[in-house]
Length: 351
Ligand SMILES: *Cc1c(COP(=O)(O)O)cnc(C)c1O
Image (cartoon, rainbow, N blue to C red; front, side):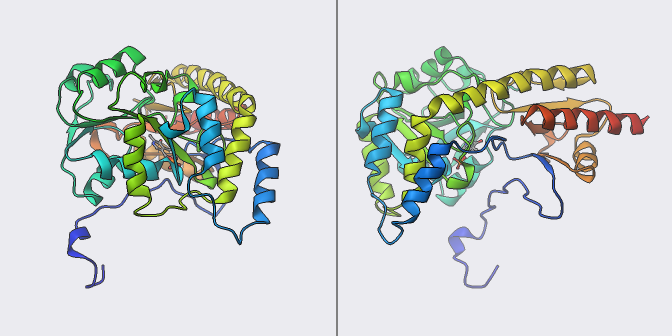
């Protein structure tokens, strides 16, 4: 830290992204990326926009917001787009977070955004089985942030539970982060016209194979979206570049390609869960493109290290409550076969 760093940030612990090592070719199951490439229309749209880079992007992202509104059955005024969903989450924390509540085990960026913006926050422990106790949040009187499905557990609340939380906090915004909703979850977008305090956040990074393009969005009441735009126009009106905007439009035009891929991931998730259970692992029931699993036969940190040595990357968290677990992204069937074969070898060498 230099002696010039502002006093207001000296205690900030930044988010740690999953590692992207370059030393060898890994089977990369550590950052929940899609194993499938973008569709042909996305490639064509990016190429076309590349020729217009001298021009600013549309600060209103009119084409993309129109397309999102059409696909999700809302008005364009109910949609905001962002540079990855991380950005719109930060905007939402800035706009609506005077006092926050989220689970103790959830997306690691929430406490970072809270600290960055000097917002006090309460981390509410998940139950022993890692599920969210809905009653903990009903009437809490704070801005609530819930990832549904949750990360890194993969567990999903039914829409009725989300509605109970939204209904139970009429004077606070409830932010539902649906980064993984396309892998078997139930979206709360259907409730945005009923509840003016609900904000639903999604991303193109996971199910739509665009992690490297950085595109996220939020859907909610028009007034909530207007507030988010006040923050956006006060930081970066051109937050979504023109290649990404039109890649997003093309991806939505080819939505069925991505939803088919999501189905394949769900099948591979089922297969991987069965294989890991046969090896004696405990696997939480996941509705995401990853599984969260642990074994009594090997320490979580050790398994991570042994897999990495053999060219397979998974995500390990050191937080005590989850240190025995590995978060394993679901990739292609071939990648999952490599994972299972490698874990089998590691366990055999343990004997
Ligand atoms: C991956 C992820 C995001 C954001 O990803 P972006 O690439 O910034 O869109 C947000 N929330 C959760 C829970 C995630 O796992």
